[in-house]
Length: 108
Image (spheres, rainbow, N blue to C red):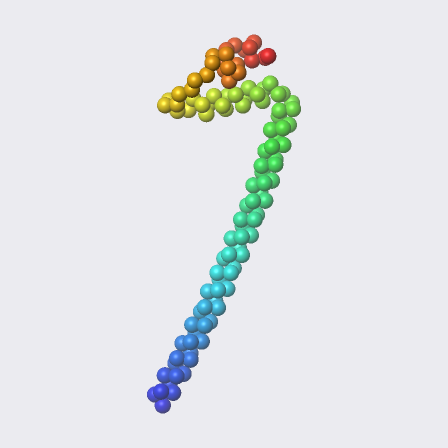
């Protein structure tokens, strides 16, 4: 009788472990599927944002190429002079400095 109860208990434990494994596998699958879909959506949205950004820049450039060039130079200056420990060796006549010379020289 005792052996029979132990056999039944083992069978129940085995079935419980099997069900637990099935539940874990299903949960893992759902997590993987959800993360993959979120990653896909993220890439799509990033791509759409990049396309919109490129369109806005292209529109701005076509409206006033001189101003766009000026803004890009300001951004380059900001990045270049950000650190006090960088050393740049450039000719003072370099095109990089065209907006620092005088307003008239930038209009070339």
